[in-house]
Length: 96
Image (cartoon, rainbow, N blue to C red; front, top):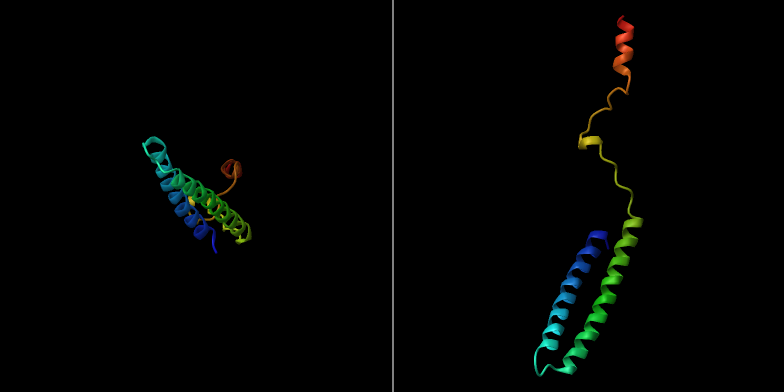
C-alpha cells in the first residue's frame, strides 16, 4: 500500500472519529442519554484511534521504502546552471 493510500485511509478514519466524538458529546449534554451507547462510542473511538495509528505507521513505512524523488531544478525550471559568481567579472577582466 502506498503512502497516499494510507494517508487517505487515515483521513477517512479521522472523519469517523469526529462523528463518534460529536455523538458522544450530544449524549453528554442531552437529558436521558444512554450510558450504554456512550460506552459503545468510547469503544468505537478506541478502535478507530488504533486504526488511525496503524495507517500512519504504514504510511511512514511506505515513505521510507519509496525511492527518493528526483529533486526539482531551482525555480522549478529545467535549465542548465548559469555561470557561478564572479564569472562576469572574469570576462570583463579578460576584455581589458
